Length: 581
View 1: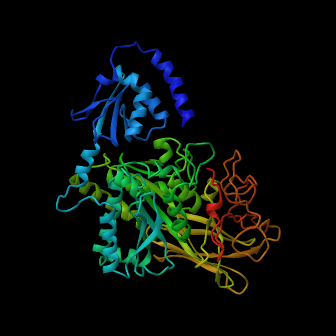
View 2: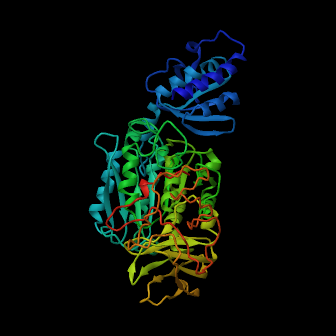
View 3: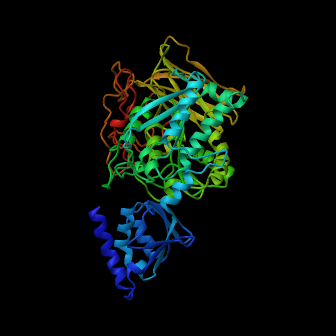
């Protein structure tokens, strides 16, 4: 923080020197709302103003310096800069840039005061109203009590808000059971001041429960485990702050992209630690997820730390574009829209687990009126349902077994995984041997690797309106001729060849689930290799060389390292990896 302040003063010193001095004092520069209400002066705001959103208009040079100084920027478009700041942050802003404010280089106005926000949050229009922590929890508990087989509330751990817990909520046909079904998660409120974010999550929950007899929703519930985390940051929600009780931006606190020193460190906070350890690490089948935010009217996807394309770019972008088209929102990667961001949730979820991770910037305000909120939620319901349903079409899924028992095997798609070496390899889960690959329609070559053995399936057909089922069997006592069949009777027969690789550098011990040579330390080399190995693999197939050999099906073997896999009864190693994107 000290280093950043010195740097800003150094550059600003040069800039201020170029502005002719005027007699205007900060004590005489009035602070007002956009509507014109007087709120004191820049140096002495009235009580009840902050935390608040502010708008800065004027000199593009000053606006750029404010962005570079690291203030929490909401939007930086159309010659205007929107920030959401606490009273202390505003005071620091005035100290650093007050000369420009006093001399008219920029105009500072308050979008909504904290008092105005509280009035909006208390509104009731007869149909919809904002939840606080207590009303959210009471509603979820009511659903669980009324529908015990359909709904289950999960305590995910403590938060920095005294007495307030992090809650997960599950909807499925046998909610108390862990079934062999894909999982999807919608989360909101990681930034506490972004009040519509928890509301869209609660709105989708209510929609599913109220319409559970609808045929499409019945199918979704019967064949999916649907997860919801409505309020990730209870402290910020109550206090009206972006950060948690320690003032930390939780969406910069996940273990991704930590390749250079920053003010915060990954997983230092209760909320992020509990999200990772008590939820994401305990889920075997998460395939897609959303973190809701405000504002900006954007559907966003990975990566956030770079403008490079993710391995699954085509399928991820197609889903984001569809959601954007339904709402009129912009669709683009987070990195393209906001510049490089370290420690974001989306990058971690996709990089560590392969989850199709999206961020959604809802609407045009952090605190819309309840009438505006109602329209906002209705407009974003259909995109939410698209994401919840995505795994049930244009997806290849099946079970991987060895001698009839489920195993953790690597699943590589030629032409997809070879395009990036950042995401950790996609694997089947240890409990059921299930895997899911969400793809665009077309023909693909799949490679399955387990303990040095490799099975290649060519010409696997993916169709738009159904799943393609592809079961894979290792071991000599199971027929390895498998069919790749979609639910719509679009059959693609593909013979499975199981070739044992005697030259593989994967360990030959009996532990099927983790290569003992895998390096669980952060990869900090220049190539950005995030799979945790030290072999400089640059083609993303995990085979230790730079050749794109996925799908060759030769007898030479894969030579892969099985990094960050689940070990039955031994916990999960993925969070021990320092994933440097």
